[in-house]
Image (cartoon, rainbow, N blue to C red; front, top):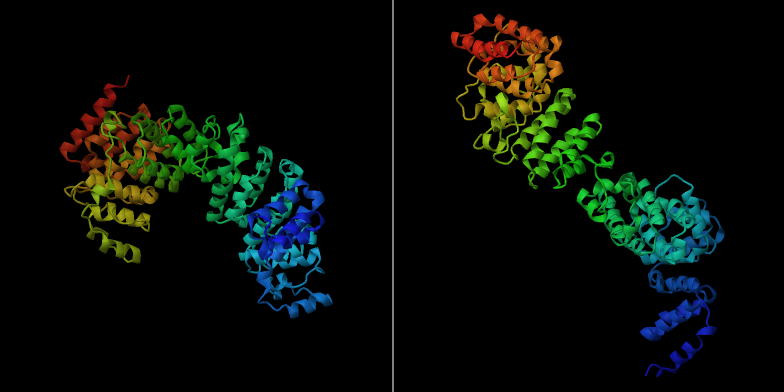
Length: 591
């Protein structure tokens, strides 16, 4: 049955006499559509690929298969210029289809490099036909491109790389794929400019080849060097189609005793796109703490909420981030921590360590960083499981839930005025809940000072919670607003003064370190300045909390002097409150 066609039988028997070009023609002829003929040709060619011209056969096969692309193109004008040798740099005046359908044997490597720089739009079959015809100078053209600093961009870069992958990279033997010099020649040189545009097809083919760990790492480093030239979609494509497939299949051989080395050499610039959980899946011996300096703020937050995160892990992350909080992204870390806390079950002990470390860090942070962290700390407080005590003793802090506070609050009218910058002194026309539930990033220190002196009624639902939410949102200008109030002689009175002082005590005074509490200049700044106008309204909570802190005798006396200056501004009840909740307890507990 297989030999019923005499012409087919004769062709198969004559394979030894056919040239590579004739063998390619046999495969594409209509009579050669049967699988057994195609397989017979490849069986013959692959028995001795070099001697029987497998590479030339494939090139001619590409040329024959691409002839359909040339049927509708008339390359007369281009052909005339090519024949006359008078292109004179006009390579980009013609489309790639015209080149593919012309006779281009006279193109030099420089000419081909110039055509590839044009980024002409064309299909893969068209580019394949053209580059097959210019195969003789293709490597030299790629070498010329490699000696420039340019990156190939535009619609054609991905297609060209696909075709080069078929014509050249796919022809590399397993031995060559394990040879550092060969990989360097191709990926650090000839293909470098095209790598930012690598298609999923190219990456999948590359991942499926028998790269060694070392040559995979060479390839990965070249993609890493091009990371900034890729958009986020392209970066994830390299991760999903090359890095993860290779390491999932062959990566066990790439494991290193050093977690830093393993991360750098196997992920490079793409490591920030991978979850910590995935690192551990690929390499159970991976130590995130050892490699904490390479983790992004988001990965550090993920590490803290993983079940494996014990006290030493959480502290290691905070030690790293707080050593240089702005540069290492402490604020972003806390923001991501809030996000993860809504999805993970974090233990109470972990929350306690997290809040302790945040409280220790806040006093030392730049104001803009502290502002962001304070607001997110408030959000994180809402995720603490019931019964978990974060702050104990005299200074139990009050959590403030934005969702609860803002339920039913309409801040639209206020928001419109804030956005337009036309408050014009109307700060006291709106209740504190409206401010708390609005976006107040545009408020200045002067504006905040005006709001704090409005004497909002504490009878509105959740007033202290609302003040805490509002002052957390406006934390960035809080100190400056207090400084403005300190420069006036007036005392802040009214029903809201006590509540505001409680919240400031929680957000700022409680953040002062023991060293600062013994520093006369710090105490003077706060009690003789920023808090002075609020002291006549100090609550029992504020006084108890202050008394529980490690004031020295000298700084206690400074604080007491400021309360004494406000004695005549207090009611008799308030005077006795200061005596019973601050003075007597402090002196009773001091030797």
